[in-house]
Image (cartoon, rainbow, N blue to C red; front, side, top):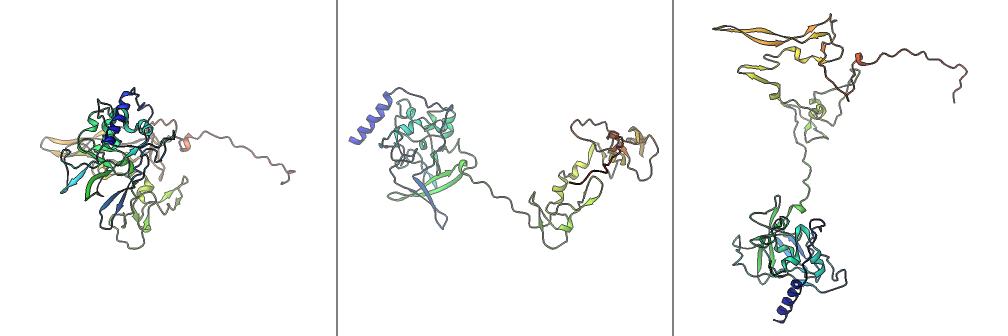
Length: 372
């Protein structure tokens, strides 16, 4: 009873002091790891939780505080998430399991991660108890719900001193863990590993089959260094051409899709205009649509005309068609081009027409010059 009265006196002394805000969120502390609690995974897949029992502060993980004080305060809360018959026990029915957190008064007072405020929780208008961050919802504290943060069922993180409301503030990406802890009898607690401790997902493995459609080739696969595709070297269709139109070998460790960079999906080849009328290379498309852009073009205009495409009961059916009109004779074998009027301020044009004329320069050699 003397310890209980001494503990109440400490709480009263905190309440009598002038309340000083934690300066959150102007300055905030990082989350603290649970130094006093460790998990052990058994061969059968079950997980056991063990408390170290060390007499150290949960915040600074030291026996003495920065000012040299050694007094440790115990948390007045009880552990969250105890289960029975596979279900979490209701708050009013769960047995009391004392929280194992201990802390220096100056350390816990300065700790303001996620808006936690120890001094406010100890005041008579809040909880009137010494509580560590495991007994208030981290999300509700950040949203300044200082009263409701301490209510309802909470679930603790196994790695850090954070807890969350299971029903409304459960963090996305958390992993649920049932932890067995030894007391007079073994007890099971529902805990989580919150997203702050998630490991990076391993890189995807390459597909163990050739990515080329209708591939009937067997043999060693080449893995693409830019994606997860695999392919047979002889199955590739892409070759490279340099600026002089000379064929070169494409990089051996890149698939066709990564070499081309922009893959055209089949459905994007079509543009429906109306029922039974769409632009497509195999149906109504014209070869004129494939004319490349060039400043030196052989076409004066790109007009359209109505073309008879069939008949019905009412008469002939006409549809619009685009075509090219050459401005001069085109030599056999020359590419048919047209100027689209693009304005590219930051892209250089490699057309011969755009190159400014350069006067020939006569080189003069000094016959008396000697090699160095």
